[in-house]
Structure formats: C-alpha cells, structure tokens
Length: 400
Ligand code: ADP
Image 1 (cartoon, rainbow, N blue to C red):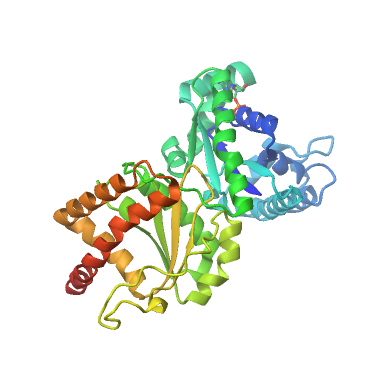
Image 2 (image 1 turned 135 degrees about the vertical axis):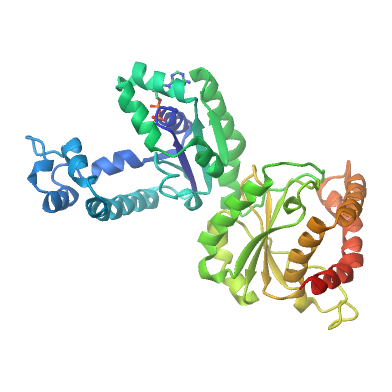
C-alpha cells in the first residue's frame, strides 16, 4: 500500500485533484469528511464536545453548530486544547481504520488541508501539493463556491504559506491553468510515478538512476525530506542520519541518486530495521552486505570484510532514486562517508579531481546496458576511492 499526502491552500484545487485521482483508481481518505463524521449527531464525539462546552454548541436539530463551537473553543488555548484532545484521537483512529481497510496494493491518497500546519509530511511516502496564485484561488472560491471574499482572505492568511508548502512538496502541481491542464498533470503523475512506485514497493524493487552526471539545486531539500521520513521509520534505532555522497557536495555533478547514511549502533540493529524500512517504501538490496574494504592501520591488506559490513536500502519511488546506507557508528565505512563528503566540500582541487574521475567513469559506462554500465562506472571510481582513503582519513584526523 502506498500512502500519499495531498494538500494545498484553500481554493488551490485539492478536491479537484483528489477527484481526478479517485477516477484513476486511488482510495481517497478525506480528512475534512472524517472530522465531520466523528462529531455527527449520535456519535460519542459529539457527546464529548457537549460535555466539555455545553448545549450551546448544538443547533436546534441536535447537530453541531460549528460557528458556536468555534466561538467557545477558539477563545483561548485551554479551550482549543480541550477541543483537540477530543477530536484528534477520534480522527486518528478513524483514519487508521480506513487505511487498514485499504487493499494491499491500494494507492491511498489522504486529502489533508492542514498537512503542513500539523507537521504530517514525514508520515507520507509522497507529498503532493496543489498550488495556484492567491488571486486565482480567491476568484474561484468566490465565483464557484460562493465564499465571501473577506472570509476567504482571512482563512487563506491563517494557513501555511506557499513557501512552507514547497518545502515539503515532493510533487508540486501547478493549477493556475485550465481544468484540462491539471487533469493531464494528475494522469501523468499517476502513470509515471504513483503506479510504478506502488508496484516497486510491493515487489521490493529499488528505483535506479542512469550512469550520467547531472546537477540539481533541489537535492538538498529532497534529502531533507527523505531524512525526515527515515527518522520517523527508524526511531531510536538511528544514532544519526546524514546526507552523504556527491549530491551532498554543492556544485559537484553526480548521478541523480541521493545517498543517505543511517548510522546504527550495530549490524543487528540494521537488520532489525529491514521490515520497517521495506514497508516504508525503502526496499533492501539483499545482495549488498559490505562496502569495498580499504587498507588501514588495523587491516593493512584491506581484506577484513566484517569491518566494512553494511546494509543497503533503496527508494521504491521512481521519481527519487536513493541509496540508504545503514552503517555502524565509528566503523571505517561510516567515518569515510562523512569525511569524504566534508573533504570534498572543503577542498576545491579534491572536488575537481573527483569530478574528472567521475567524468571518466561516465564515459566508460556510456552506451552499455545497466549491469555492464554499473561495473564499468565503479571500475573507474573505486580505485580512486582506495587511493584517496588514506588522504581523507588523515585530513579528518588533523581536523578533529
Ligand atoms: P480546494 O479543495 O483546494 O479548496 P477545489 O478543488 O474545491 O479547491 O477548487 C476550488 C474551486 O475552483 C472549485 O469550485 C473548483 O471546481 C474550481 N477549480 C479548481 N481547479 C480549477 C481550474 N483549473 N480552473 C477553473 N476552476 C477550477
């Protein structure tokens, strides 16, 4: 099951996108609808609200009088806390129940207007944000939905800003254009990303990147989003989680694959995370059990595989290939990943030298099929890593 978060400012077109996704086969979980459902007439939720705030929050027909509730519940922080303490667990339980009911191969879309405000992005495997200019949103709300303009302005001002939404958006759907344009974007997203993402996750397949060097100013924020998800999935089992590799070094072209290092206390902990990470959309590369050993003071021949043990996971999302390296705290591989990154960040000539090696690797891999390309690429790159290993470790020691 794939869990997608859908959000956007009021009037941006969330419901429109949600409907298009349902037409394509998604299972929709509508946070607003659940929030209404758990306090419908006759529910324990409504009874609890009356108990807390009095009969004055009811309409004559016994249903919830929302403006009346808002007047008392938003009056101060204590009242607001009381309201949230009643409704949040009910909404959470109902949401979990609906997710539990979804089929194993479902693509579940959670429409959550306040996803950003409530910090829910890391819970989702992919966050889709619908965006439109404020003027356009106001016009649509007033013209199509009959909302009072001043009211719409006030509610938009109280929500998160588009910059805050951009920070969590794995996918930004621009809805300034015609309805057909957004529908085509949604279909494209569904076919190119969501369907293969779900299939990859179910089959335990990692998304791969071409052996071509590119640059992308978004790597940093994309890595931050992956790290937030991994922190949530790994919990206390992760000592630290870092963006490493070439995509963590500004101005260095790289294969379009983000390397993340999850530092764990030992390999048994790494193994205990296999199920959790796989379920979170980060499948295991079962054939990888260690990094290439490099000679060091404790292992002059560089043959001690155990010291270089690791687990490798990928990302099932075809739109964001990633290597998730689980390495043991203070092991040579764990240190080298951090030190190499910092050395490349600090040293212009090291960066230039590495880029030249990478260009050679890229050339060696060009035109080959994927397995042969991998072998050719690493055949050029790994010897350089072996060569700089002592330089980097010494540089790091001198700095410490
Ligand atoms: P949200 O759920 O984000 O508040 P909606 O999907 O309800 O937004 O869209 C707000 C209004 O604008 C609706 O009446 C919708 O039909 C209309 N709308 C959405 N997208 C477009 C579009 N691309 N062009 C014209 N009207 C649109």
